[in-house]
Amino acid sequence: MKVDMSPKAIDGRLRRVSELRRLCLELGKSRPAGAENSGKITEPPREYKAQKQSKVKP
Image (tube, rainbow, N blue to C red):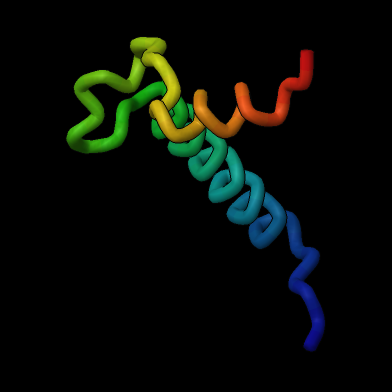
């Protein structure tokens, strides 16, 4: 299979890549659905704290 290297084909591929890049950047700015607390820092689950404390030796 040969890749079409005509100026028209190259221009079309560059435009498509440019659009995909722009869409990816926009998606990176948006929040997932149902992510009300996505920007807040929360405490780790209690189980995680217990495991971490049990590994630490005085």
